[in-house]
Amino acid sequence: MREIVKRAAAVLAALAVMALGTAAAEGEEALPGYLSAGAVARYVVENGCGRDADALERVDQTRDADTLAFYLTQVYGLEPDSWTDCAVYRAGGTEAFEVAVIRFANEKQAKAAAKSLGGYIDAREGDFAGYEPEQADIVHCSRAVWSEQGDAALLICEDPGAAEESFAASYQALTRVPFDPPQTEDMTLYDSAPVLAAWESGDPSGLTEHDAAIFAAASAVLEQVTTEDMSEYQREKAVYGWITEHVRYDQDHYDALATVDPDSYNPAGPLEKGKAVCVGFATAFQLLMDMTDVECITVVGASRENAADHAWNMVRLNGQWYCVDTTWDEGSPEEEWDYFNVTSDVMAASNHQWDYDTVPEATATDGGAGA
Image 1 (cartoon, rainbow, N blue to C red):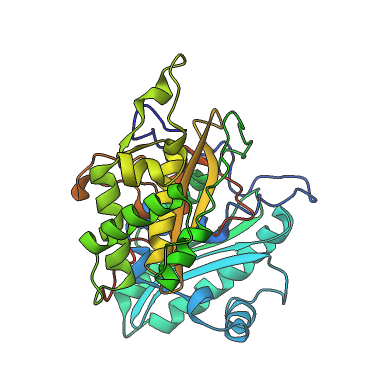
Image 2 (spheres, helix red, strand yellow):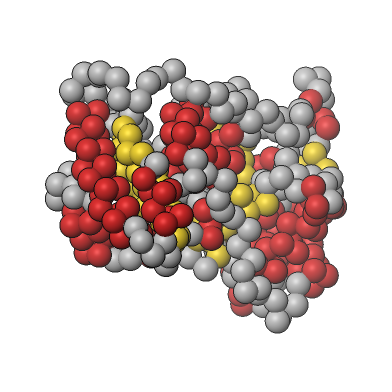
């Protein structure tokens, strides 16, 4: 459930064992849905181009579907409805920078799309020629490439060679270990509904003794660390800080001859006794988020290439999902948190596995803007 070494080794971003533009079977299937075009594009922008992806416009997220379709067909010259996924980053204004990754059903379609993107590059250079010669030079040296996995990429940036290398490397760097639930432990989530109902009504008198103790402990934590004027992000951060500071991993879980306290698997362990295993950490965080009206889910997954059951959380702030893992940050001060409001890619690269098709994808970081 919990990695003995807190920070698992990240997946090495070595070059993928494939060559851009090499032949492949026409009917070769596209990449699994959990490695999105957005993940590949962000990797290229940040690792190949050295840019902050969040500081750029992502056209496929900021514009409506009709505008995006117009951009891909009329501006890029792609066939209507030919792509299955896409991500377009651009700087805008008088800066030519633009990186796009567009996914197709097979390599043949991706190669044809790269040819169309090459035509866009030629036209784009003309847009800057004369009045922005430096930007025109950047466009002149840019590239449109494709991969055997069925992606076409537009790489208008200062170092298109590095961007192309990152495009190739992204598949190995980002491809996630397929999820195979270990099911070595009971990962059933504690039913906190009675506690939440008592919190909403202000009347805990009908609770069982066990739930009443959880209610009292959770209420005390929230009274200690939150105030009414806090934003959702501030409440989340305050609760995360309390848990990582006050709760420790139940060491009995490492001893095959010891009996682990059953409360370590539910909110009572962390909130009352200051100890828990991962599912206890996660359900306590979930309960406190629910009580503070921060949208939250608990992810029951795995770690260490599916060798161990593991659980963590995701929160939704301002419409964006973020991953958090209080267990793997336990005992760490805020400046050393590695798993607070991180992306799904960060979780995957730090040896977390989960059902990628049913769990929301977290692509944003921090979540504290405007807090």
